[in-house]
Image (tube, rainbow, N blue to C red; front, side):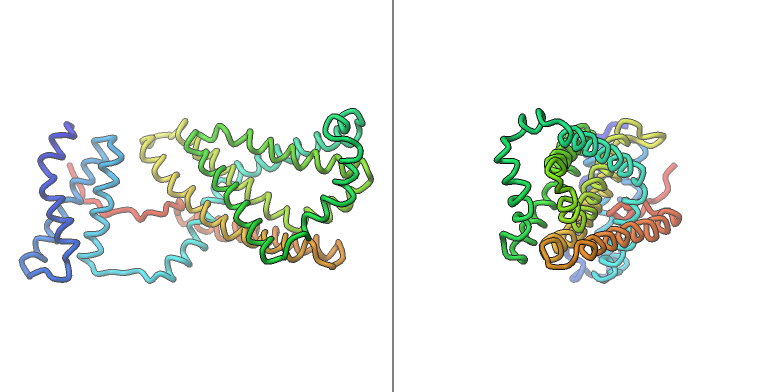
Length: 330
């Protein structure tokens, strides 16, 4: 199909439909009939473009136009609270659940790297001296590591942690546009930082302090990072191996689904930030602080499994864009 000729032939109809849709509240009876006719015609145009062209920009424009016209024709309006509920019961958990094997792999690989580096640092004084001087290690182990969680007011610290962690996760998701290739390196850096810190703490018999401080918030926080990484890498893989569907179509659908995860993780990391600011430095016993982190982690995993599996069985993909109406074409 000659896409330029197709656009030239039908652009007036599209512009007219956009005009009628914009001023739908003041249309005459004849214009309402014209709106319905153009809506059906442009739906057919969209179907033709999707089946005969790879122009994702044109398909997106027509999809948006048809969706707006459908709203004008039907007069339907979904309350905002229903969209909010659907996002947290369908869109976010189903994308997370579909990518479960990807973020499980990211979790296992990161734990392996962190544990290996931590054991190496803890057991080799030469490695410790290469990282920092004995006095600097003592300062870190005895003061800096624990003081980090209490040196700022809790509310201010919570907002700082939330913004920082949300930004890191959004960066990981953003790297999905590069086929997810930089994501393993980011995960390695993150695991290396955790492993080296743990190794230094273990070298001075402070491993109980290390886990007592990072476990309450770290479980949920790292899960969010691993989820973002897994979804980003899965998007990259769908571009490489789209299956029977067109690569542009798969990329658009999965890209919107990835954005659902990015938005959902803002809430997850907000909860993690609250735990880090108010629970981690609190005077609660270590077992109680760890219990809070474990409960938050188990609650999140149960949420993803229950809602995500149910949505997947219902055929949901997590695509944030509703499928437009399509008219059959020969």
